[in-house]
Image 1 (cartoon, one colour):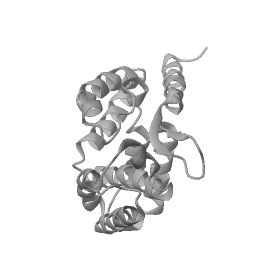
Image 2 (image 1 turned 180 degrees about the vertical axis):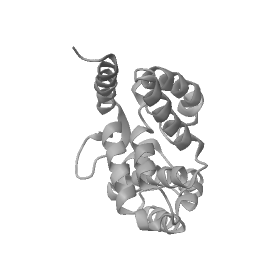
Image 3 (image 1 turned 90 degrees about the horizontal axis):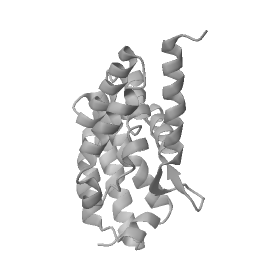
Length: 197
């Protein structure tokens, strides 16, 4: 007989598999398809491990990875709101809170509280770990856009000003090195004609 706790954990794990079916606007490198949110979550978690040396001393890496692994689970219900679309982001907070209630609520109470707290920490962006995690979440789509010759920027008519305003503050909070990298990539994308001035 399977315990109720284990049954709830398995139910949650099967439910979050649906994140693989939530597609984002970034294209996978070398491919014709857009990445899904599960791929994104894995990639930014690995990115945080690889770029750890650029974080403030004392950053808790297990916590950063945890934040990144749960930060987009709410997209199972709420969908992925395109980062540069104000209309899509207008009711995003409420949609995501309702999704968090349902999705994390599938877990046993103690785990539901723990993972919901990690999601809320990421959203608030106030701890060093959350600021670094948000930096990873901002940097990866920039890298994707730059290395696909601005493909999704061009599809949506995105301008330099939009990218700078939305990305640079979070990247500066994560690491000045990331802000510098981002500025270099943005400037190059404009020169190449991949990002409108």
